[in-house]
Structures are given as C-alpha cells and as structure tokens.
Amino acid sequence: MRTPLILVADDNVHNLYLARFLLEKKGYRVCEAHNGEEAVALCQAEAPALILMDIQMPGMDGLEATHCIKSNTSTPPLIVALTARAMSGDREIILAAGCDGYIEKPIDPGNFIARVENYLPEPLV
Image (tube, rainbow, N blue to C red; front, side):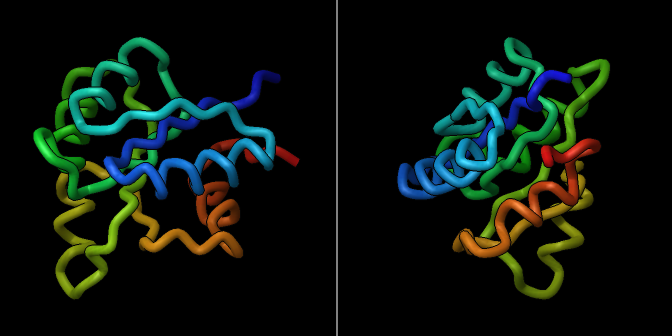
C-alpha cells in the first residue's frame, strides 16, 4: 500500500513547517501550497488523498479554492479546513463551502495527527 499524500495549503510558513514536520514524522508524504491557486494546481497535478486547507489566505482563499477543487475534480479529495475561525457559525460556513471538516489553529502538536487521521480512510500504523 502506498503512503497517502497530504497537501497542506497555508500562507503561514510556520504552520506549513509544523504540519509538514508532524506529518512526515508519522510517515506521510506531504506537499505544500502557499495560497489557494497553488492548492488548486497541486490538487490537479498530484491527486492528494487529503488537503489541509487554510481558510484565510491572500488571493484565492481556502473557501474559494475548496469550491474550485470540489467542482472541477471528478473524484475530489477530502478537504479539511485549518482555521482559527472557530466561532459560532463558522463551522456551518466552512462545511457549506465544501470542506469535509475542520481542525482548529493554532496546530496542537499533541493531537494534530489523531485529528488528521480521523479523515483519512486508512491511517498509517
């Protein structure tokens, strides 16, 4: 079985570094996008199993990128929002935009992998 590819889309280099470090430490393959446009292009080129999508990015934000990926991909990947927007009503907006779930930021290294693996069909053991 091939290790799942996870695309992390975030404009914050510290969040990208932390997510990549934690995921690769667990054995996942990771690619990065620094904005929504890159996320859409990488999704088409790499076919990730899961996208961790920051919602607030300059240019094309995560909600717009999610909509674009979901509507232009025959078998779209799971998309999980990475967001600091965890206020009442934000969950509904995120899910209505097409995200399959969300993980709150800042990233908590203690439970990040467990949260990510909840969305993967076959987590690594």
